[in-house]
Image (cartoon, rainbow, N blue to C red; front, side, top):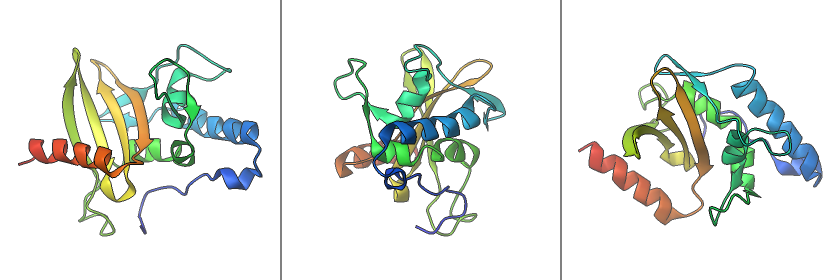
Length: 167
């Protein structure tokens, strides 16, 4: 997709198979985007979950670069998430993009869902199969996760939720 605001991918292949160097490079991007500065969503700072810190990196970093298939805390790197580490902030800052501003896509689909005692905001760009999830808090917004949809059925389920709320 030719786009107007989506950053380039950060490819693992550019690191000649040196995963530790790649992971550190990705962390520097994340640190710049969410620790050294804060994007805003709905005029509130977006903050990250910092604890537990593992390998010197905040919890939120692992949520946007790794999978936890069994929900046991053992995170496995997900190259599709890693490649798109710059996209997380870009989605937050450009969530109001629509087809009138960016003719290459249908725009970011945005919807809210109740989750436990809070409200989660989903930012989905169907053409790129990518979604960022935020949680509204009283004075800030918390970054929950971001991921690429590997499977059509998972993407279709999210699109059904969006369509149901936007009839």
